[in-house]
Amino acid sequence: MEKLRVPSSRPTSIKDIARLANVSHSTVSRALKDSPLINPETADRVKRIAREVGYRPSAVARGLVTRHTMMIGVVVTTVSDPFISEVVGGIEDMACRSGYSVYLAESGADAERETGVVRSFAERRVDGIVVTASRVGALYTPLLEEMGVPIVLVNNQHPGEFVHSVIIDNLVGSRLVTDYLIGLGHRKIGYLGDRFGYQSDTERFAGYREALDRHGLPFLPELFVEGDGKAEGGLAGAEELLSRAEPPTAIVCYNDMTAMGALRAAHRRGVRVPGHLSVAGFDDLAIASFFTPPLTTVRQPMRQMGRLAIETLLSLLAHRSAGATVRVPAELVVRESTAPPPDRGK
Image 1 (cartoon, rainbow, N blue to C red):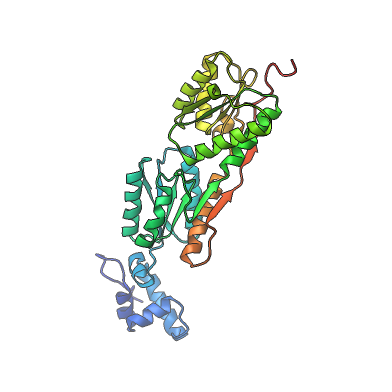
Image 2: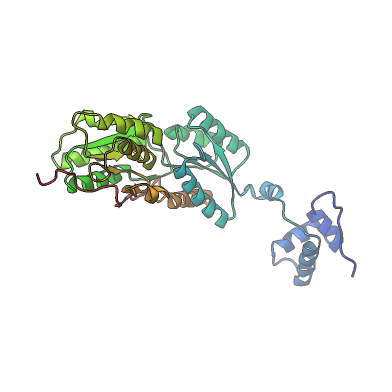
């Protein structure tokens, strides 16, 4: 039998299949959707022809009919952030399993650029948008009605609540690690935070303060410094703390990258970790267990958070109720960067 052909200059369309099968366009469409209204023999013939000519449904055409593009826009601060890359891995995993494609764009941690990217995604008719570490936060609330596209935030960094978000319990996580250090016998515990005023840092600092208060320990302002959330800022901040007349015996760091810098500062000064100084982080990045020494930290289930963001988005798209805030529990991970202080028991 002669092989069926269509012009090679363009993709095969439903019109081509209808011509080859000598049926109407609507018959082809229904046959390909397994409609019970089509005679089984006709349906089999249409499907056979579609396979032979290499027909692939057009996502654009399908979107015009269903009003769904099967595309999700994801806005990140930067793809080079290890935390972000793990979250995006979870987003892509769940989106792919659900038949969606993911468009990724960077905001550069700039609020105006972030809003512009979100508007651009909406104009491209994505079905939904996920924003990680948002610098805009609650300002999305008035945009929802305007754009008509569901938005889910992951680890919102802007003060204020948003309708749909997935966040770690920052306060509890920071309290857990500070409680642990106090339990080891530390009484001079520094906090190395982030100077950009992010909500996550505010909550983690509050957890640190809460743990001190619960154990009757005073907050010492000289043991509080601010970094930049990166190793460089952690290095500078830890250098400042370790230069104090009475330096801390332990440091709670805003995140693992800050802790990496703190470990480097201790090494420069010949301060043994954990012999003379204990260092703890927050995130449990994949590289945290490879630090020297391996880092005690608070685990954020980053991939799970990405998957939860897509699950929330899918619920919204299906017009099912979705929780306003999905709060993920924090987990303390104890490794070798923490130990009792050298003067314990004296």
